[in-house]
Length: 381
Image (cartoon, rainbow, N blue to C red; front, side, top):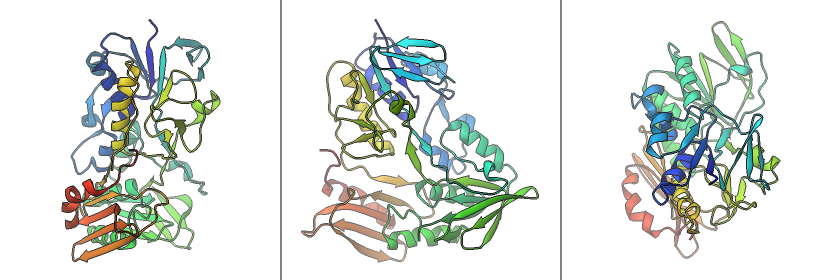
């Protein structure tokens, strides 16, 4: 019996493996991962300092434990070179492995901006546990950190680092933090609360160059300003990993294109997680991955199941300004209705009839999440 092969050991890869094993205990399962194969919560990387978590303690299970729990054969520190879809094989170096079904849980990678300067190569990103270990080593003894990007991850790291005594500068071309998720009023409250914690914001500009300056670095911004930092972290966003799928001839757009059963354009090949596009949506968040894993597990076990996405709020881990966002669908027609108080902003996105299509809650307004959530339409009914 040929195994089911899963490429990727993040939440998507391990998640679908666990869901499959609930229904099928005997089919051979092989998981191939480019990293160490530890089971950990990726969202915890951006608030691990406040959580008193080290790279070692973030791992909830080591690869040997995961092999026993599932059970599965896990090939760690291994990269897949190519997919031979017609032959139902994958290539690892000069070896090939046959599969009965293949699952691509390739994730996404950090976008890297073209930045000049003689120290542009020191720019750190945090996209996995190995990255985080390098980051924690870099900030030991560092007093100042510059963060490029004021989106979800950049804002979370800004909160975490500032709360732990680091001087933090955040640079973004937008005019506020979480510019794609929050209306101006919610963004302003988040900005002010993190500024009170010590974060210095630099909006409407970008980093043009990073140069060495003694033991640290000098950042030259597009507006002519210069900043100094001991560590520079890039958090400008993610892009799905598509190279392997594209080279194999799978349909790709903004992500690997899948149908409601998470099947790609090739027979017996499925995909889920940050690398996929379903009904035009690319959703690099935790809840879509969990719902996809719960649907794909039964499909792999022989019961074709369509994924359904309910409304899925995003919790922003910024304790200085608790924030929950359930954004309206892209292109949705409507407007924001704003209610502000001293330490809260309730933003409701409604259509012309007053129907709730999305919300953004800051501060004390986050308490209304449970009341508002049932009123939202499903993302994928």
